Length: 387
Ligand SMILES: *Cc1c(COP(=O)(O)O)cnc(C)c1O
Image 1 (cartoon, protein in one colour):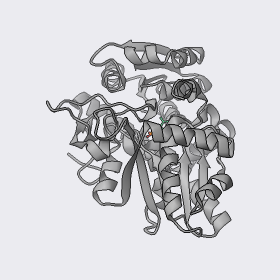
Image 2 (image 1 turned 180 degrees about the horizontal axis):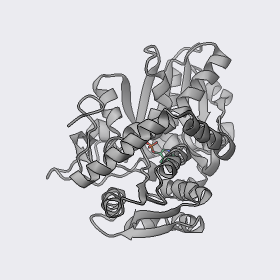
Image 3 (image 1 turned 180 degrees about the vertical axis):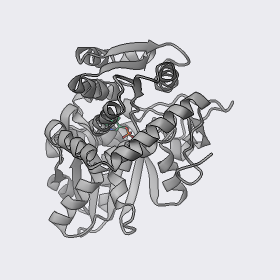
Image 4 (image 1 turned 60 degrees about the horizontal axis):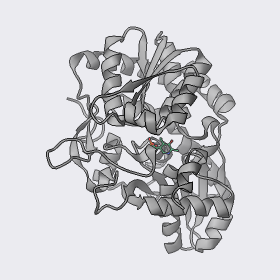
């Protein structure tokens, strides 16, 4: 088997799925070299998503910590409030190009489901989203949102009836309907080419940020900080800076109630190499070697695996992976709201929590970019029950 990222990646799926993945990979490789395809993708990013997203100098936050300058990449200002739409637009355009008429997707909390239903509505594609039954009950409002956008939401009862099961189920359904159906995966995870393809559609974040920081600071940043669930917003910010060795990078996972408890989603810190969802990567396993249920206050970081490129970037020590607890994320959430008038997603608040701690230890001439992957309107009710 070929691996894309050191020993990580691959296609650990049945042969019929490999065929479908190869068809997808060929279409992707062709599309990304086609200027017309790229032009169309850029058109929708500009006119529908609202890109480029600003790079905002957080003056108040910077002054409070008294160290490095803190900039926020404002993915929260995208249409539908997060970075996910960059990827769904890209993949739907690819689906159209391949002549597919139906979109299927998995979702955990519903954010990727909503982003997929949004793009499917705009492009007039039929859309079915698979969601664990437990998640459907926990995230009723997102189920309604997806339905309002014209998608069909199908409950998945197998296993723990949460995200990991929804992914397995969606891959199974894809195989049954491969001729007319496109499987739109929500993060930089899964069998090849998904991690590479999702990165391609998210790397716009770092490309813009690089231009923007050079314009205002006249130099590259010293640090990039992003939260890591599956790892798509992080790889989106990091990719364009990877050749610049002087730029240090930090991925922040969810430590939940603490790394010493079993209620966390810290795949890098507590996981081992193994196979999940068709890829060889790092993953949290229980004592019996089964994929372990994970926990975070943040639904978007609540994933037992991680994108294979992150496992690779950790192994070559290019990116440092840290974690933030629920409480640290809540503190970050409230602080940014009060100090800057920006209500961040609870996912992004994990990156904020570690970003400001880092800023404090650095001198004033240093520069940090924190990826504000989404806005926090969706989290306000939950935060209310914690304070
Ligand atoms: C889904 C989501 C994440 C986590 O997904 P990644 O693929 O790790 O980026 C982070 N932030 C927000 C706002 C999200 O919606």
